[in-house]
Length: 121
Image: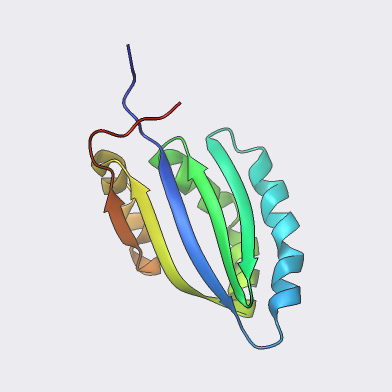
């Protein structure tokens, strides 16, 4: 019997300020080290294209997203001195997204509701 998929993914895109890419990249291991022990984190990694940085991250549910943001808040504050968030997407089941709409409102994310028919392994 299958369980409902409650997975939520954060899809942030950052643009490093002029001359700040190396400093931003120096923060990546700190983000990863903090996140590594989060029990509800399913995957976490950074990718870079020019001055653009993407953090690929997924959590078991909305509670995992909120715990992560609380956990990395100080480092995120440092990162936002070096880069701007150019886009933030949050993907997940509608019931989980509803738990995130108010706490994430200040980040102005685009919310994408998972549609029926997909699967998770």
